[in-house]
Each structure stands twice: as structure tokens, then as C-alpha cells.
Amino acid sequence: MPKYILSLAFLFLTLQMWSQEDQQQKLEQRKAQIQQEIRENEELLQVTKKKEKSVSTLIAIQGTKIKLKEKLINTTEKQTKLLGNDMYINQIQINKLKKDLTILREDYAKMILKSYKSRSEQSRAMFLLSSENFLQAYKRFQYMKQYANYRKLQGEEIKVKSEELAVFNEKLGVQKTAKQKLLEENEKERLALQQEKEEQVKLINSIKKDKKKILAEIKKKQQETRDIDRKIDRLIREAIAEANRKAAEANRKAIAEANKKATADAVKKGPTSAPAKTVAKATIEAESKAIESSAKIVLTPEGKLLADNFRSNKGRLPWPVEKGIVTLRFGDQPHPVYKSLTIHNSGVEITTDDGASARAVFSGVVTSVMVFSPVNKAVMIQHGDFFTVYQNLSSVSVSKGDKVSTKQTIGRVRTNGDSGKTVLKFTISQNTTYTNPSGWLFNM
Image (cartoon, rainbow, N blue to C red; front, top):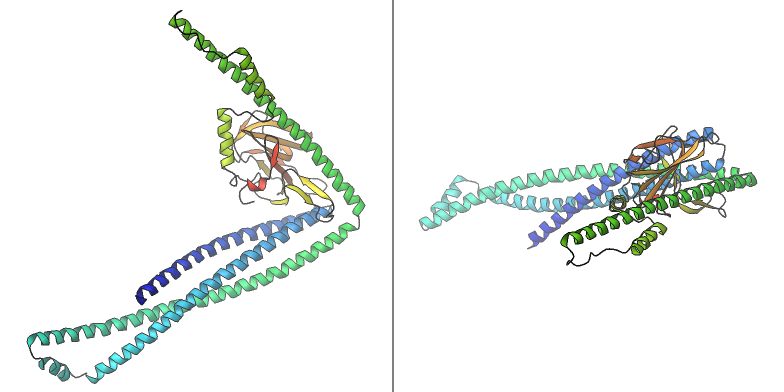
């Protein structure tokens, strides 16, 4: 029974070790991803420092970098904790093996001593010859044979456990080195994080010196953003109205065709047949007008399928640019310096590389190409009753009515001449209700 319990415990510990190794691997992958984001952020920060005229942008990028550093430290701490747990389990195995080896060696030593005392061939022969009968002699012979085999097996078991102990000791040594390395990495990142925070404080202090001018600049940009949002809202409502107008017209035609067929069938059957069951014209018109006046898209079967597919990919949609970092998130949020000033964002702003392309996050139909200025354009794509909008494009490679596929290039992201930033604003809405793109895009 004790052996059975020990076997179960060993199995449990082994499974736990496998699970922790899997977690370690995932954490290592996550850490590598965060480190890549930090490197990209650092490159962007250096470029922006050279080109940027507005210090507030530097603060926003610096804040993103600080958050990434904090994530990296947190991930490394999780790795260290898992490694510590793994080391504890290995230490338990080492202690158990040492205890088993001690018992085996003591038992083996006693057996060797006993064997030494009765080592002569004469003693073994006398042990057999002194048997009272043949059966007893046979049993004694079997005993001597089993005893010799037992000695051999014990010797082999000692060897196996000694090798196993050496493996665990080596593994523990490697883990101790790895843990020390993680601790040193974490300490290095903590120092770097502290420096980033100190630099951000310096930037905030520098921006406060010209508060009036910067506040006016922020308010101007916010007003421009609201004006663009209103234009996009109007275009979405127009797209909804157009889609519902087509759906109402299709409804009228479908019912008219059904009425025509029912009447023709009744005529074929003759005057004695039951009157054809048709939908009254007033009812058809009432239904169609209800569709036309709806504030939401009345989906056709094809549109419903597209909307359902779009919804089922929530959290797995590709980014609207190949690479970049989020420098302004969705919703109302305080300004990084002037906390009393609220910034509204109907989507997310992604800072990317100069010359980057914007791409569709899902298949759909281009419902609008907006031109706010010769160098500032936007594309709106419909996916059933969902709309995605890609703003701040210098050029567009699609037209209204075009069908696009996932990751298809739709234009080039504009680089601002004053700030030197290349920023795409991306929004998702269901009808006219905006939703946070972070919940839709993969790993945002």
C-alpha cells in the first residue's frame, strides 16, 4: 500500500512538472513577444524624438513603453515563480532518491556481509547435503538461486537510482543558473523602467512650461476628430439607409412574385378551386416601409452570414497594419499630462512605420471612400451589419462597391509632415454603435 501511494505521488509530481514546463514555454514566448514590442517602441521613440514637434506625443509613446516594461517584469516574475516550483519538485525527487539509495545500500551491505560469512563452496554444499530429503534440497537450491538473483537486482537498482539522482542533480543545477539569470534580468529591467519613468517626468515638466499653447493644440485636434467622427456617422447612416432601401425593394419584389405565382396556380386549378392566398398590397408596403425606416440594417441571408462570420472571429481578426503599437486606446481617457482634460477616441490609433499599408481586417464591401483633404482619406468597409473604418490614409487603392478580402491592401497610411508620425485610426461599429477594437483584434 505505501508503494502504491508513493507511485501515485510520483505520477502526480511528474504531471505537474510537465504542466509547469508547458507554462514556462508559453511565458518564454510571451516574454519574447513583449521584448519585440519594446524594441519596436524604442525605434519609434528614437524616430519621433528626431521629428516630433509636439512633446505630448513623446509622452504617449513613453507611457506605452513603460507599460510594456511592466508587462515584461511581470512575465519574468511568473517565470521565476514557476521555475522555483519546478526546483522544489525536483528537490523532493532528489531527497526521495537519496533516502531510497541509503536504504538500498544498507540492505545491500548487510547482504554482502552475510554472503561473505557463508562464502565458501563447502558451506553451500553442506547446506544442500544436509537436507533431510530431495524436496528440501530442491527448495534450498531455489532459495540460493533467488538470493543470488536478488543481490544482482539490488545492485542494478542501486546503479539506476544513482544515475537518476545524478540527472536530477544536474537538472537542478541548470535550473538554479536559469533562475539566477531571470532574477538578474528582472533587476536590469526594473532599473530600465525607473529610468523610463524619470524621463517621462522630465518630458511632462517640459510640456507644462507651454501649457496654454498645447491645450489649444489638443482642443483643436479633438474638434477635428469630432468633425470627422460626425461625417463617418452620417456615412454609416446613409449606408444603412441604402442597404435597407435595397432590402425593402427586394421584399416588395419577392412578395409580388409570390402573389403572382399563387394567383396563376389558382387559375390553373379552375373556378372551383379555393381562392389564392396572397399578401395584401397595403401589408407589403407597410413591411417594406418598416424595413426602410429601420435605424439598423435589416440583414439579408447573405448579409447575416457575413455578420455572423465577422462576429465569430472576435479576438482573432488581424491588425489593420502589418506591425505597430497602440498609442491611443478606445474611449474617454485622461490626457497623459493634463489629467483634467478628457480625450475621446471612437477607435484605436496605431503608430506604424513610414510608408506602411493599411489592410482590411475581414472580407466585405467598400461602402465609402472619404476624402477629408488631398492627403487625408479614409475607407469604410461593410461586413453585414458591422462597419470597419480606416482613417488617415495618404492614398487609397480601392473604390466604392469593391469586394475586399481579409488582409487585402486598401491604401497607404499617411505620415504627418509636422509630427513625423505614421498613425492609422481604426474603428469598428455595429450599425452606429462603436465598439472597442482591442477586443476584436488578435493579441491587442
